[in-house]
Amino acid sequence: MKHHTVLRIVTKLIIPLILLFGLYIQFHGDYSAGGGFQAGVIIASGFILYNIIFGLEVGFSILSINMTKNLMAIGVLLYIAVGFMGIIQGLNFLEYNSLLSSSKEGQLLGIFLVELGVGLTVSNVMILIFYSFNNMGEKL
Amino acid sequence: MTIALLYILLSVLIVISIYVIISRNLFSVIISTTIFSMVCALIFLLLDAIDVSLTEAAVGAGISTILFLSTIRYVDIIATDTKKSTVPIVILFFLLLDAIDVSLTEAAVGAGISTILFLSTIRYVDIIATDTKKSAVPIVILFFLLLISISILIYDLPEPGKANVVNNSQATKYYINNSTTEMGVPNVVTSVLAGYRGFDTLGEVIVIFIAGISVLGILRNTKGRT
View (tube, chains in turn brown, red):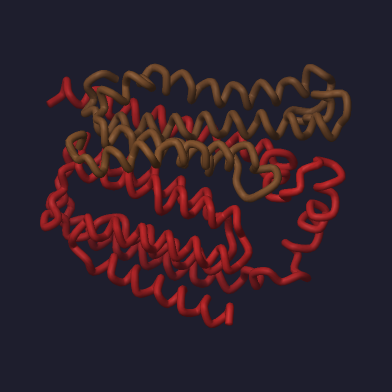
């Protein structure tokens, strides 16, 4: 769809806003509505829009399939790693109290990291599913 | 005013789902489910469930539409070929379950991803819709049995949002009272999801991760086979 001028220009204008909105939902989830799941889906939809307009080849040059595979695993591992930090410090699994000096800040940091892991996994799984369906199983 | 608007939106949901059931064009079914999700998001907004509303708008109306459409392209189901798609049944269950304020987050993600998996599995094992004509009747009976049992069970559920039922008595109060002092997070939903119930969220993330892996596994060898 690269030859559609209107689509191309509007997409270029809109994608930064979508990604920015996704990041806002991700990192402002502590204070307003949102969190990792929603942010991951919104960021993934930005990437998918780019892929629809400019074609998969251009999309792969930004975020390859191997990269999405790695990132979605890194998200889960980040979550589990934060959980094990609690065990290392002598607390329960996924207890964030002693991540930082004060227990409240530790909770904030823990929630931040956990939501980051969720966002990474969700967005990359969505992108990967889109890639798999549209790549017709060629370069997987 | 709010109640009247709520009833209008709910009746719109019923109209859309009836259309989804009787329609034979898969493309218009998908667009209808998108509208369904948007109306659901509005309803959640009216019920002050901003987080769920946002999720419904992003997941139900946004990403699942894209995934459904690319699935249709992939599976090459032409509209007249299919007698009935599996989507309406899922939607019907949603309509039943939506009456209670259960978290639709899981339902949207699960139903979206699992529908895609089912469709691609159908393509993978080459089951054509007309082959399953014989087994259609037991499935319908099973579906109605499930429908009846769920409808009976719904009567036992407490009224949504009521203050003095068991569900809302202890844990909810604890979260609302202590979230700010213990977590320092003003949004109670986030502190419950990532803090108090962090282990459940870990399970959800792993479910999504497994869904991604399964899609990879199912779609990997299609080219070599055909």
